[in-house]
Image 1 (tube, rainbow, N blue to C red):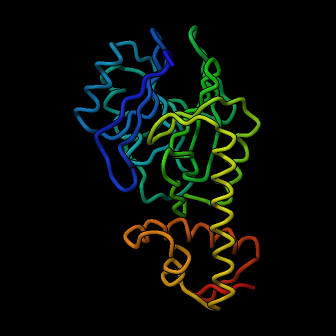
Image 2: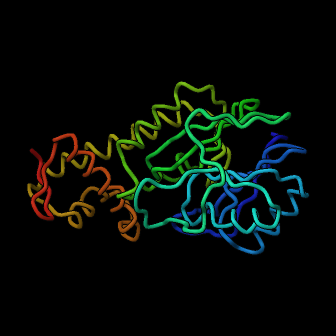
Length: 265
């Protein structure tokens, strides 16, 4: 893994686990991916590790734990920022990030040392991107896939149907391991993707069963019964993903909504 260096930001928490992972790709022509939060000690560590060799900054998505350090680093080093803006509104949006270069699906960023392929993976965020290091078959996953935790899908910008579609999309790429936005490097990518999809669809099936059992139910009550296997202090977070499941089921015509209550059709 000599082409890739991981630096973890000192921002541990419920959403971030042990902290947000920042990656430096390359040896002499460095690409900085997900510079993370605007924390002075983290930026200092990135600058030390970069040794004035950082040529560009890439961002998987613009949530406040992934991109705020991009602008100050870009200004100091005078290097461009690459990424996308969200399609609509997001509660976790970093308003400071405006890309110099807008990235699209299948774009290639080529250097003499390595090639990065851009994969648009909406779901966690509408502007979410993964980056495949072709020489390593390593996928920088951002928050599309995380180590040790399921990904929060928070509407309106987060979309469960898009998330599952984006997971399935990864099967067509040659990937040997993941470099996630939180946690450790992850091997067995195919099994990991299959497990995540299975978990999401299993949770969705439970939503349908609970609606059949309880009849008309609101979001708060449904959170408690659908996530009865999850600690109560995590229910406010789980509610985001539950809402995303409900929106998907509404779009598919499996359930209906009357004011604030949901019912199985």
